[in-house]
Image (spheres, rainbow, N blue to C red):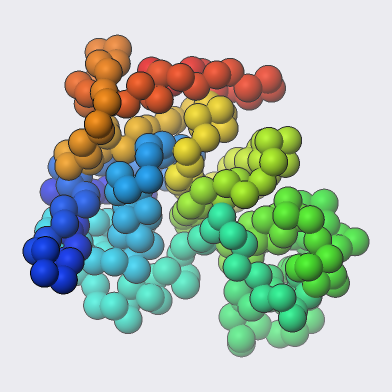
Length: 258
């Protein structure tokens, strides 16, 4: 599903030259995989998501997602790829305040789709996430957890092949965050969508069968304080101590990191 080979990305700063952000020699994620990517701010996690959805193009290397060589695509081609095959979930929801929850979701559907079909499909998804009685409410009339569920519907309603979530529970309380993450895992699994979640929350990351610290991928990642983790294939010899500090979350299947 996802394959990166020799990918590098830097940003040019006015008067300061290039700032190296990401260097991934090789990385693959299989179809239907569910992966939590952890690491501190500024370590290249969001840049990686932007490369995978085609917002950014790599300076070097190859990025293939669902058989599409994004590194060889024009901006217009990458935009089309993103609209057709990628669902994106943000920390801050990005719902339009003047539209109802249902109308926000329907914005993600093709304009060519019949109005009756749009409403039918939206109603099915609101039922799946337990918000059937809230779909005609404005975002301001919903709790933050409910708003994030609406944002999840918007990302999933077109049955994308890949779902990218950037700190999707970062603004939620602990109980709500756990509920939202469980639901996201269940929904993407039922749709056989590949899920990649960026998070600082090691407790929530522990609920994923696959967890990766950005230091295991990014050759340019340089933590200020590092510890040597247990030996294993693909492990960076120096990763932050946070990698080994995840605690078990009741009811979750994940194991401790490290």
